[in-house]
Image (cartoon, rainbow, N blue to C red; front, top):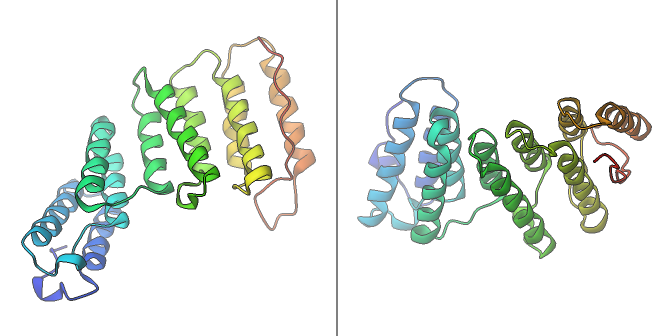
Length: 239
C-alpha cells in the first residue's frame, strides 16, 4: 500500500512496478484508492520529467487504462471530463495511444453519464473504432463490450428509437465479423438488444423480442463457447 521505493525503479521495470501498484488499488474498495492511483501517476510523471530512469518510468498504455478505470469506478460523476483530459494529456506529452480498452472505458462512462449528448458521443466512438479496425488498426478493434456499451447508452438515455438503433448496431457487428474478421456477437450483445426491445414503447416490440430470441436459438452452437452462428438481423419494419 506504499508507493514503490526509488531503489526499485530499476531499468526496464519501473513503469511495470507502478502499474501493478495502481492496479492493486483499482481492485480495492477503499475510499482513498483513486487518490493513491493519482499519487502514483504523479510520482511517475515527476520522475520522468526529472530524468530518473526516464524511459522506464514513462506512463504507458497500461498506466492510461488503469487510471481511466479508476476514474470510472471511483469518480463516475465526472469520469467523462476526467478521462478525456487524461487521455489527451498522456497522448500529447508521452505519446500514449488509445486501444480498445481505453475506448471501452469511455463508452461505459458515456453510458452512465446521463448527458443528453451521450448517445451521439457513444455512437461516434463506436464508428471510429470500426473505421480504424477496417483501416488496419487492430488495437482499436471493437469487441462485445464496445457494442454492449453503445447499446446500453442508447437505452439508458431513453432514446425513442433505441431498440431499432440497437438492432442496427448488432447488424453492424455481424457484418464486421463476416467482412473484416471482427469479433462475433455473443449472448450478452444479443441480450442487450433484447432488453432494448423489451423496454421499448414502439409498436411491435414483442414481435421483435421473439424474433431475436428465435434467431438466437437457431444460431446456438455447442456449449463449449459463447458465440452464436451468425445471421444478419433483418431490418425492423417497426415505425
